[in-house]
Length: 342
Image (cartoon, rainbow, N blue to C red; front, side, top):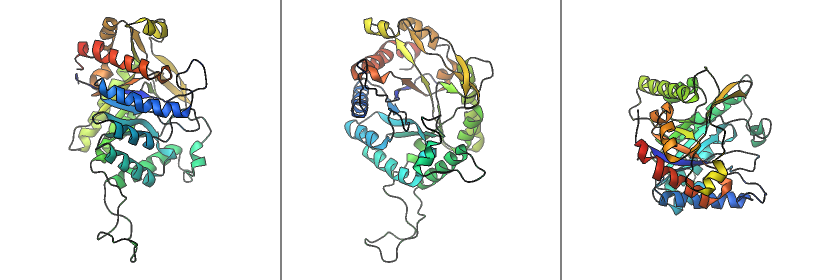
């Protein structure tokens, strides 16, 4: 079990033209994401992570924003949770990722996956990506991921022009810019225990959210803890030389002032929920809202948080930068030390 944690935030980057939202445009969402990452670093938070969705009023193409955050900060990890690989040109993505990682001096932590149900039917087809006959969209995502991981290794694979405009180094050419070490900072968002085992076999870090697309009848945190253990067992069996990383996501709202109590004091989302997603049963984890001492008592019982080295706090980004910075500070100041996370 891991006690000391890296603590980051995970933003979906929603915006809506509503008078009740502090984030009303795409520009607001992007600029406020950068500002919150800067504020989070100043508060001692360890990571700034962002969801990626297409055809939605949410953050989409992440690399310009991640590069901007990398240029404005010096310590905080920056990443995604997750990029839907069905939509990606893996070679172009490798160039973007290499550039963002070099700008941030090696702080990029990229979560990738098959993704989740999107706003449109088979949206990846509009991006020019179609599964080969007899294969699925999940196969497409893993194929794109395999190519992406291969080119991140930095080996040459492209035949050089014998009459280039500029002189080439000897041998086959690789994509540039290449960022050494980035391959070890790629995470896979796994929604099942079987996918977590595959993730361990591939030598990818594990990213597990507040949703598992299976249900065995046990509480969510116990099912997720089993998922993490299966991942670690598969990693060990595969013989990978380094220690893997594991993140879990949670919604945690300490009630320390009137704003907190107004927003979350009457929250009833204090139990797991079971539903259906993509034609199968799924289990959704609970949210945590309460006085700091009550949160400490409840979170100490969360077996999946105990098993992970990184905790991502899902934030209500439409409440604005100031409130979300306050929320992160409350967790870091009042909750994390009491649980030994700091």
